[in-house]
Image 1: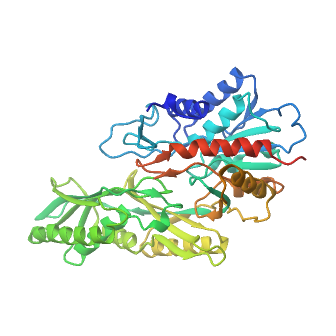
Image 2 (image 1 turned 60 degrees about the horizontal axis):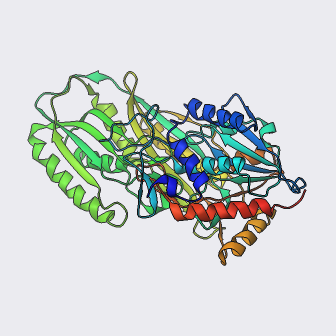
Image 3 (image 1 turned 90 degrees about the horizontal axis):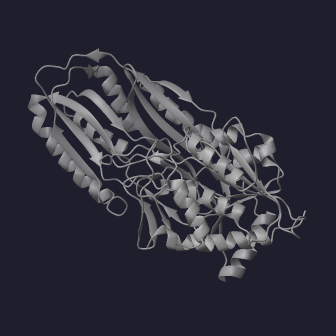
Amino acid sequence: MEVKNLKPALLWDFFDQITQVPRPSKKEEKIVRYLLDFAKQNSLEAKKDKANNVLIKKPATPGKENLKTVILQSHVDMVCEKNSDVQFDFETDPIQTRIEKGWMKATGTTLGADDGIGMAAALAILVSKNIEHGPITCLFTSDEETGLTGAFALEKTFLEGDILINLDSEEWGEFCIGCAGGKSTTGTFTYQKTPPPANYFWFEVQISGLNGGHSGSDIHVGLGNANQILTRYLWSLLEKCPVSLAAINGGNLHNAIAREANATVGVPVAFKEQTRVLLNQLQAQVSAELIKVDSNVQLSLYSADTPQECIDFETGKAVIHALYALPHGVIGMSHEIEGLVETSTNLASVKMEGDCKIVIKTSQRSSTDSLKVDIANKVAAVLQLAGAEVKATDGYPGWKPNPDSAILNVSKNAFEKLFGKKPKVLAIHAGLECGLFYEKNPRLDMISCGPTILGAHSPDERIEIATVEKWWELLMELLKTIPAK
């Protein structure tokens, strides 16, 4: 099956176009130009603010002018993750899509359905001639994935409306009415370059084969974290002998669970055999622990040439201690909403940057602001005890659920009418921009919905094609039944 044969054809055509436009976070110029050109070609009112947020308006269809104004909101950027063996430049190359057993995927990279499918739906609505709706504003925000930059900088005039439908949810049949707030905490170690110690055996250890995933919506699954597994191995070595680090790197994005990690390591020659024994033991342990969620985890060891320089012993040891002690995963569950993760933290990445710097990045989420601050402080304390310089972002607010929302009631009625069953109503642990929108316009009545997307923020990202058509039907019914002003 080809994209041109999918339904609704107009929506899928726009999604196909979007996959051809590079749009990494903070480098969205090409997709912004595409949106403005689209508006001009279709004689639609459009404007762009200084943060690269784009607004496109469409007047009501005849007889619907008295309906409340609906803002359809999506974000323009995508998470850029690829498998290590894939050659791909997210700044220039189009996404290579394929269809398998009812799902659309990309080849070796993230697909960008998060939130390209939301953009595609909005564009299809803007050009459709055969749907009924009141006044519509389509808001496309920038840099959602790396800090909600566009939403933070959004001008209040971009939120002039009554109802906001966020098109960035990833589970069909669910209406989201709340989300967690978040912040990031970073620790930076400064090391001294030292010559490699004499009579050492050098090797590279690699962690691979993990699924990775979204640090919000997937954090409760218990997926393997490559940074944690790597550090677990390095810690086991430290218990046996002195360890010299020449390099260490793992993970990429603050909102993705680390899939791959590696380190170049030296140990005294007398402990050479221990490196393989300990690795084999850990491989067996981790494989058993992750059999249900990450069955392809692979720990690999390769001999390496003696490096020209190393990280000084004390700093290397401090980095291993910090990484091993840092929490990762679910910290607490909500007492108000059954099954909702309330607080979590993600050990996102460790990178050697600039001149003699090792940077550890983490992110924290919570639907309770005080607990978000608390877990961030605990992460900062671990990093500070290990000797790192710590910096934290101010973060972004959560979105407090409103069970009495008017748009929620309209949405539930529309869903039951179309599909003969009740939808699921929930709050999520992932971050949405709605909290920031509410700060700028407290009158907004908001809801979030979308088709089913699995594996977001990883090369395993995929979207279930059948749910896109159902979602489109729901959006058409919603726009037609929006209440009057």
